[in-house]
Image (cartoon, rainbow, N blue to C red; front, side, top):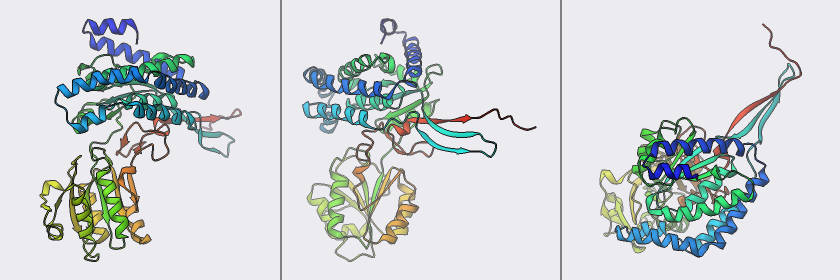
Length: 431
C-alpha cells in the first residue's frame, strides 16, 4: 500500500484512495498473469514461514481485535470465529503450503482440436484479473483469499471486517513479505486500509472498471447487499439452508452418526444441516432414535406432528422453520412421503447450497443426486464436508450457489476463466 493511498485515507478522500488501489491491483494483475508458477509458489511458502515466525505478533494483534469484540458484546460463537492461537496460525500456514503444492491452473489447456482447414484451436485457462473479497470476522480469510487469488494469477483487494482489522494487517504483512521475496508486486494482495463502509460501496461500483469480480464472505445482510448493489459479477451464496434426507433404505446407526455431525460439529458454518427430512414409510424405529440423539446432544428440535409424537421434548415447528438458517443448535424435522417428496421439499426451501441423502439403496440415491439442483449433493455423508479444503482444493474463497461459471467451493481453478488460442499456417476465411 503506497504512502499516497494512506495520505488520501487520512484526508478522508476514500473514493480517490480506492481508485488508486484498483489501479495498482490492475498493474499487479498484468504481471501475475505471466508470472512463473515457481514464483507464486515461493511467495506462498515464504509467507507460511513468516506466519510461523511472527506467531506471537499475530496473536497480539488478534488480542486487540478480541478485546474490542468483547467490549462490543459479541457472543461466544462470534469470538471463536475471530480468535487466533498457535494451532490456528499453524493451520493457516499449512494451508498456504497446500495451495502452493496444487497444480497451477494458469496456462492449462482445457481442450484442443483441429479444424478441416488446418487451424489448431485450444481452450486455455487464464486469470480473471482483479478480485475483490469482502468478508467479516474470520481473519484466516485474509490468508486464504490472498493465497488462492495469487495461485490463480489474480490480484486481490481484500476488505476485511473492522472487527478483525488488526489481525488481517498482521497476516497481510507476511503475505507481502512472500510476494517481495519472489520478485512479485506487493500490490498483488492489498488490504483496504480503512474500516469505513464507504470503501465497500466503491468496490461494488467496480473501482473505475479495475475490479473484475467480487466474492462476499459473511452474514446474510452483507451478501444480500453485495448481490443487490454490485455492478460487477459476484460469486456468493446468500444462505446455507442445507437438508439431510434419511430414506427408508438407510442404515439407522449411520444416519444417527451423520446427522449429529451434520448439525452439531459446528453449528455456525454454512454447511450445517438445518432441516432433517425422514421417510415416513420407514420403520417406526427410524424417527425416534434420530430425534432422541439430537435432543440428548443438546439440540433443540422443532418438528411436525410425527416428530412431536416421537419425543415429548420436540417443539412444534412453524411454517417459518422450513427454509430457516438457524446457525445454532436448532434443527427442523419433517417426515416426507419418500424420496420424491423430499426432493420437492428441498426444491421449495433449499438455498441450493448442500443437500444430502442417507440410504443404502443405490437407485434411490442416484435419483436424489440427479434431481436435487444444489451446488453440492451428497450420499451417505455429512453436509459439513461442503468445504474447499475437504474437496482437495487446498482452501476455498467461498461457496457459489449461482449457475454461471463457478458453483460450489471456489478454489484456484474456479478463479480462472479461459481464452481460445488459434494457430494457423496462413489460412484465410473464404468469402
